[in-house]
Length: 129
Image (cartoon, rainbow, N blue to C red; front, side):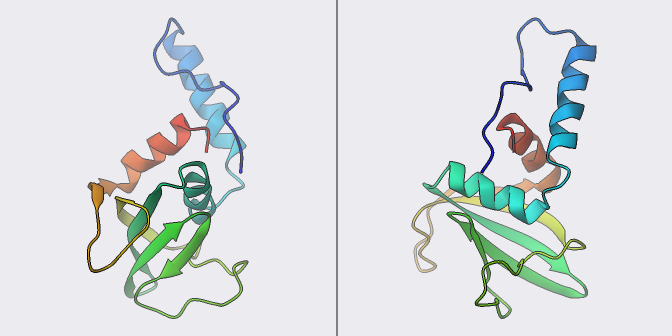
């Protein structure tokens, strides 16, 4: 898990160029992490949350739960080995629901629903992920 080093400052007196440079630096720093790894790190940072992802991999729709650094498919088999990624590099993430942990399918507690991936990426950047 990576911690924010303050490189990305939102607000304050930084110029637009400095803000863009900080954003670019944050994006380059995490370029080696896949979206799945970034989301797993998010749930390590915020263990009181569960993420429910609505994705497409290949020609197949899927729902993936991410909690405390682990991902699991709700619609397809998930490898028993946690080092095998659930999200392929070519997966398309359409939206994300934030839920209160623990996740109970019979009675989910939604904190926020249908967050577009493009919006969630900005949140990840704000957290240094």
